[in-house]
Every structure is written in C-alpha cells, then in structure tokens.
Image (cartoon, rainbow, N blue to C red; front, side):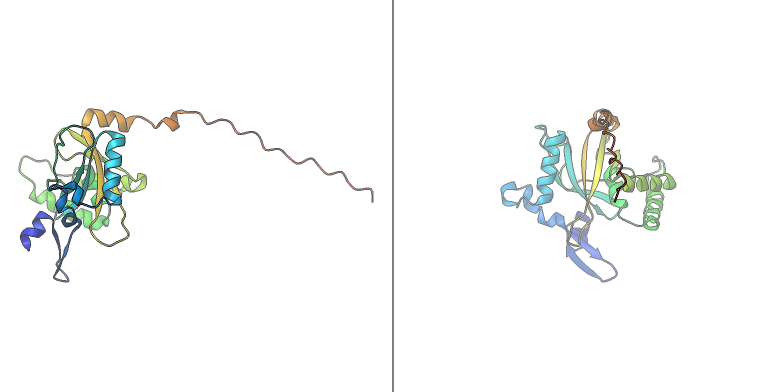
Length: 212
C-alpha cells in the first residue's frame, strides 16, 4: 500500500487510517489505449486548451511534497517533454503554487519550511514570505505563473474545482520560457482597444406647470 501511495494511486488519511483511490487510478488505461478511457470534461478541457494555446497541458495533483503529473494533453504535433507519473518541484513551479494555494497559509509555511530543510546542499532555500505573497497574488488573479516541469520551461497554472471530494487538481499549460514569457507579458487584445464613448444620457424635458 505504501508503494501505491508513493506512485500516486492511493491517498492515505493518517488520522482515519484509511486508504482511497486517487484520480490517477482512473487514468491508468490512458497510456495503453486512449480509446478505452472515457473522455470526461477535465480531459476534454486539457486537450482543448492544448489545441488553443499550442502548448503542452498537464493535469497534476499533490503527492506528498511533490507535484505529480497524472495526465498529459499535447496537441502540438511534437513528442511531449513529460509523461504521466513524472514528479517535479512543489515549491517553485507554477503548478505547485496553484496546489499550495488551496491550503491555509500556515500549512504552506510548514511545507516550505520542511522542503527547505530537506533541500540538497547546492539548492538555494525558498524565500517563504515572498512565496506566500506570490501565492496570495495568484489567488486574487486566478492564475499562477512560474517554472514548468522541466528546466527551461515556464508554465501558467489554474486550479480545478470539482464538485466531488477528492484530489486537489490543477491544469498547467507550459512551454519554452522565452515564448511563454512573451505571451504572458503581452496585454490582452481587448485591453489595447479604446472602448467607444457612451452617449450622454438624455434628460427628460421639464414639465410645464398645469393651469388647472
């Protein structure tokens, strides 16, 4: 059971001492034969986003203190740079920020403190106060920008709110840092247009006093 928790197929509730299946289990057949996996709303959303942005889109969850990819949608025509099951940094990535944002700030601080304590000697520690402030900014805007799943990649991540209780899930669209940096820095087309002036409201004509 512990091995299945590490791989992301089971989630362990330490307080209740119970195990339950994760959403990664439901996607087990995707790598073998995609036609056997029912195309649900989230999977369709990931593929639609990949077609629209022409970037790789990842569906990810939190597994221990790592980001685990559970599904990859790639409509770019190029071999994907990441596969389902891969795990990457929780503290610095865009997907990690979106996942951490679902927790209370006190929980985020505890996780980042632990990650700093367990980091390799050559790695710089995470600035916890700055990271929490960045996550708060993402909560207000609804989007999280940061590192991707591999070196040299940048990602834009967003949370998925699902009616059923279960894993915390995020979608992350990622690509080369130079390309995504230019796209995220450009203002949207609607913001560049000057809205047309609205006509001044017409005042009603004053009523004449009645002679009666």
